[in-house]
Length: 315
Image 1 (cartoon, one colour):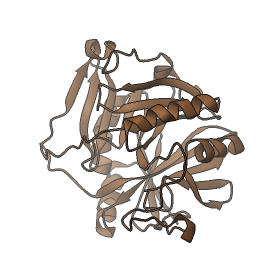
Image 2 (cartoon, rainbow, N blue to C red; image 1 turned 90 degrees about the vertical axis):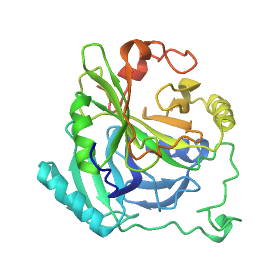
Image 3 (cartoon, rainbow, N blue to C red; image 1 turned 90 degrees about the horizontal axis):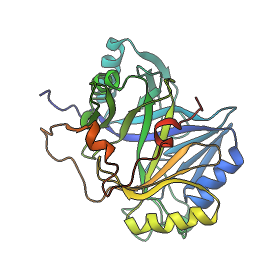
Image 4 (spheres, helix red, strand yellow; image 1 turned 60 degrees about the vertical axis):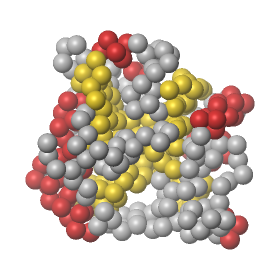
């Protein structure tokens, strides 16, 4: 197998578009429990209480929905340069930007389905005001006094017309490893999960059943315990949030999950991955068959049909 490449440290942030900016912001802050760290133009920058960076979600008002871009942080300036050289050799580079309110210069590129990525190194660490200073100095911010209090950004899922092409592309661009995949009876790759570090995954791709390109499936924030997800389900219910599926446990990656739609229609997941880490340097990709996936989730819950068809922007 190829030697693992650890030029990328972690998933940094996701920019989501919303055509209902006030309602979406209310959901992400008052209901989901993220904190606002800044504003610029039509964008609001948000984060979970133990995200060390200035933001992990950039919420931007727009005429449409979906994801504008996803950002990854490199492990060093030299690592960033290596990734840029590799991406430029692949012919998918979009060039440099000056950065954002939360980070320095970033190099942008696109995947085979048209999703836009950026890689940066220089970042702005979150400095909490006095009223948010945590009791423990190794935590980014005090735990918010809210029923739902996500700890950190966990992963995102993107839709693609050809997941096999993505499976080939992402390791070359980011140095990711493929931890798990779904291969259907006809040989089609139905889903693929990638990691750049020891987390079980930071991005997943699943096949877009509509045939559309460049769509967004969901963004996920992690909570500390499964019980927090059960509490969140009641909060979502009381606030009229559409609960799509769960709480339950995935078979793939074993994540305990709950999926909802925020007011503009972007899918959001709360998850608890337990203690699962990919520690083996020679990890062998786990492949799930079509028959195995038709059994549903880990404890038998059938995958809801909208999970295969709903994405943003609408197809």
